[in-house]
Length: 337
Image (cartoon, rainbow, N blue to C red; front, side):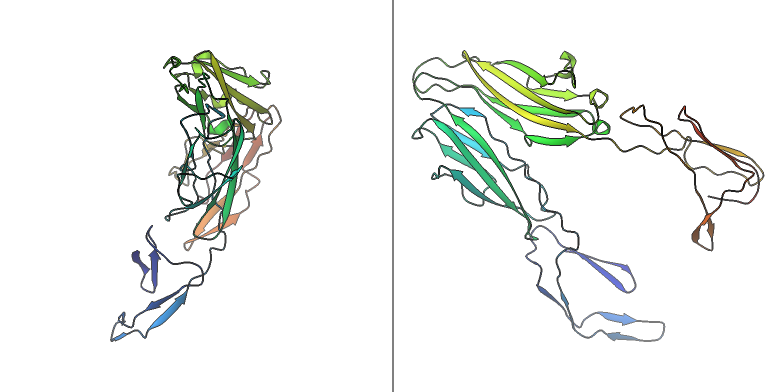
């Protein structure tokens, strides 16, 4: 652990990845801490601290990567290693399959490997439950189609990230990526080309018109933030064709409104009390919404180390124009910050 005094009376202990403390544990502090003042010193008596659960614990976020279609031979790998939310400690994983199958992955492994050579063709549902040290859990499920055996060679594509997520224009560019594994035949038939033919589609196209420049690599799509329309829902599909066979995978993007960015032109600065200063808002709306803005200015002044609210004097001119230029004109007088 990392132990530091933030002041003469406060000790902060930050636990590392190897910590085993959980809610309900008790930490004992030995009586070897020196207490000193200007005239004396003494040893502090022993004490104990009870460990409580976080007041605002956040559940983990599951990121499950699995292919949509696989050939009925070889093996299938599903990974939840990109999941987050464990803080400084590792997450634990629990897998479930329908139909139930024996696997080569341990129950607490972030990845699962399934032998497919003995599986019947059909749909396989794979679920994972991720648990943080706080006891909070989250789960996700993906469905994989196991193709017929024989001469069928199916390209394997895996979506990197969740099948559905919320994004905002201010987060741009938004990256959607798939991983490609060349098709493996179940007999001596030739495999498909190492470089597949990739087609990206957006539905509805009116919500997002895909551009060739967004694909620096065929398997990676980077969508500029300004191309996203707040309030829209877009399904992005990636079709991969190799060896005469096609596999597809999709993800849903829900575009949520971006937060307004409140900015003051020129930022903080030092001015003389005798000089006037013009403050202009450089605030922006990443979504470029046509709706009018509401805006207001407030001020605070520093008195004896405390920030106190103050009313803007009537001699100060404040305006909020429809053209999105917010101006506060301050004349000489008392010093405000």
